[in-house]
Length: 215
Image (cartoon, rainbow, N blue to C red; front, side, top):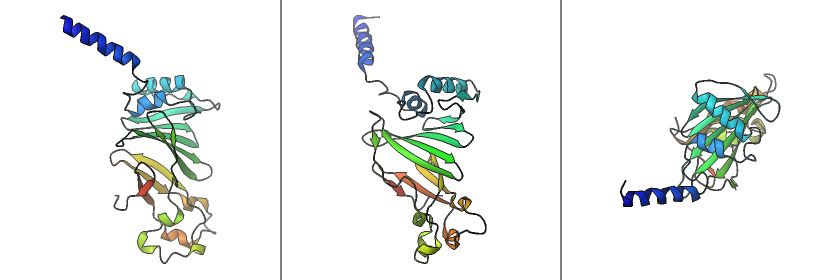
């Protein structure tokens, strides 16, 4: 190796050594490994590493979580992964490229008694949480736009429940309407019939915005 190449190699190694941790990480698996314990409190960091090792070896092996249960890594791709935390809960981590910085979305879904999701958003550079209003569609947003005028507040459910998933190919969050599951057949509000099965939304850096033409 000539002197110039040797100097370049040493400089590159030194730069990498002082590079902020995780700055090159851009896949869902990388962020899953590096997420602070406060972001994913149910799974210890070493447990997450084990889960990825099992998954990469073709094994869907349950591992012990921090609440005395078992969790399984069920899906991994570059922009998204999903963990079955328990029989009644799951966690998804999604990578959302933005102009200034990558954003990480953590979707938690609980199925007690009705599947319902909450989403938290973090800046990838320092894992600081982004204050995002209205993390899921309201009852009115689940009503088709052309039917909102005829919807009477008294006939609509008081709350909307939805099971969210991130679709990396379209960079959108799809909220599947689970509100009807909250009611018994004998007491379902008439307005349930006006509600759509799903609503798609895209994160614009500050808030979730409805995608009206999603298919």
